[in-house]
Length: 61
Image (cartoon, rainbow, N blue to C red):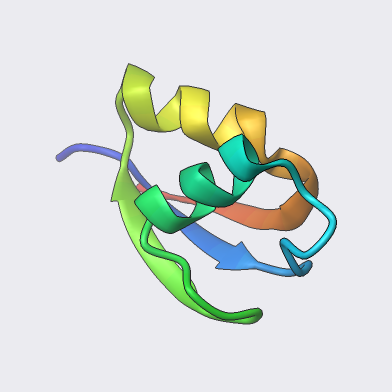
């Protein structure tokens, strides 16, 4: 069974760079407090690392 992450957008992207805004959108997050589940792979880990200051990340097994 593959691991996955539950990601919740906790802070607004208003003062972020355009690159960070695009990364948040690519993860599937649209509004503050929206939640998505992403799979555990290197591409998603890189995206989560880039905008980790905006997110709340929990690991699902």
